[in-house]
Image 1 (cartoon, rainbow over the protein chains, first blue to last red):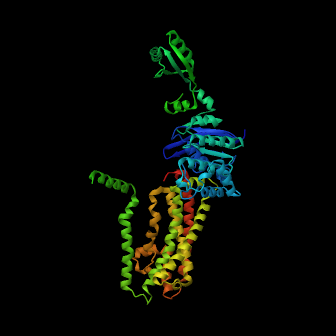
Image 2: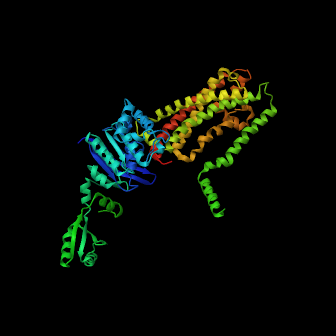
Image 3: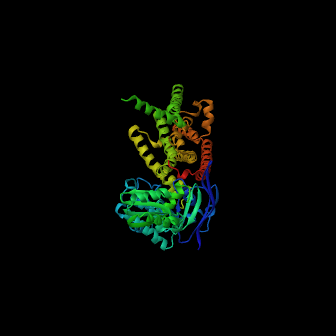
Length: 304
Length: 262
C-alpha cells in the first residue's frame, strides 16, 4: 500500500514539557486511521504539526512523499482539516466564509464547489446565517463542508461529529465513509469509540505523547480481557453476590439484574460455581469488551 | 452595597494590573505623552511667530496627515489580531496561503479604507473649518505615501511582537502611534524638542514629513534632501519589519502561538 503520510520519530517540546514524544506511524492510501487518546495526550499537537502550524522539535513528516520545507503549498493544496476547536470569521455568513476558503484553495469555479458541498452536508438551510449565529452542531457541519472543499487526498478530522445530533452524526459518518470509498485517506480523532469502531480501519492509541498501541479497533478491544456477564435472576441473588465477592469478581446488583465482571478465562469457573450453589437465572448475556473499555483501561487504569 | 464584593472587584483589577505590565501605560505613559506634546506645543507658540501662517491651518494639516499614519499603523495588526482572537488563523494557514500573501491582502484593504477615510476627512475639514487640501499642494501625495508606509511598518512590527509574545503586547496596537507622536514634530518644529528627543526624532521618517509640511504651508518649498532621508528610512524600516515578521511567524510556529487560544 502506498503511504500517504509517514511520520518518523516526531517530537514536540514546549520548554520542559514534551507534548509529543518520538512518535512514528504511517497512513496508507485509502485508509481511515483513528488517533485516540485522552485529553492532553498529544493528538491535537500532532495534527497541528501535520498541518505545519506547529514546527516539530525533531523528527520528520512526509505527506504525499513530500516535505513541508520544500513543498509547503503542494502539500496543503491536497490536504484539509476540520475541528470543532477553530472558528471561522464570526461576522461573515456561512456562504461568504466557505467561498473565501474555496478561493484560498484556488478551486476553479469556487461558488459551484461551495454549492455542491453545502448540499452534501445539509448546510443549505442556514447558508445565509452569520457564523456567530450558528449552533455548535451547525458550525460542525460548516467545518466539514470546509474540509471537503478542495477534495483533499488526505483529510484530518478532529472530533468530526462532536455536538451533532445522532441523525446528523450518522449522515456525517456516511459521508466520511463515502469519501473514503472514493479514495480519500483520513486521519480522525474522536472520543466517540463506537464511531471509531465503525469507521476506522486502524487505531493509534496515544497517551503522554507516545503511541502505546496500534491495531484494528477489534484487536485493541480484544486486549481488554474482562467481559461483563449479565444475569436476570430467578433465585439465589444473594448467593450470587456472595460468590462473586468471595471470588474477587466486581459485581453490581440492580433489582433482579446482576452484572459481574470477569476475565474471559474465568467465565466457566463463574458459571460452574453458581450452578454448584443452585443459583437459577432466567436470562444470561455476555458483553464483549469494546474499544471504549480499552480506552478506559489504558487511560484511567494504567494499562491492560 | 456589599464591601466584600466591592473589594473582590478591586482585588481582581490589582491582580490583573500586576500581571500585565502594559496596564502601566494607562497610569503613567499616556498622561506623560499628553503633557509632553501639548507642553512643547504651548512653549513653541508662546515663543515663536508663525510667519503669518494661520495656526489652525498648520494644526489641521498636521491632524489630517497624522490620520494617514494612525490608520495605517493599526490596519495590519488589527486584521491579524482579529484572526487570532477568532481562531481563524488556523483555518487560514492550514490552506496554501502564505504569510506574505496575507499581508499583501491586508495592505490592499488598508489602501482602500485609507483612501475612503481620507476623502471623508478632507471633506469634513473643509466643511467644518474651511481647510483646503490645496494648502499642501502636491506635497499631500508623497507625505501621505510616506506616512502610510511608516504606519504599515509599525503595524507589521507590532503584529510580529504579538506573534512572539502573545496578547500582553496587544496594547501596542493602540499605543504605537501615540508613542511615535511626540517625536514626529506634528504640531511643532524639530528645534522645539529637547536635545535628547531630537536624536530620536531624526530617526523617524515622520519628523521630516511634518517639517516639510510646515515649509510647504509657509510657501518655502520642500527640502529634497530631508524627503530623501525620510524615503530611505521608510524603505529601511519596512524591510526590517518584514524580516522581523517572517522570523516571528517561524518562531510562532515553533512555540505553537498560531494555534493558541487568545
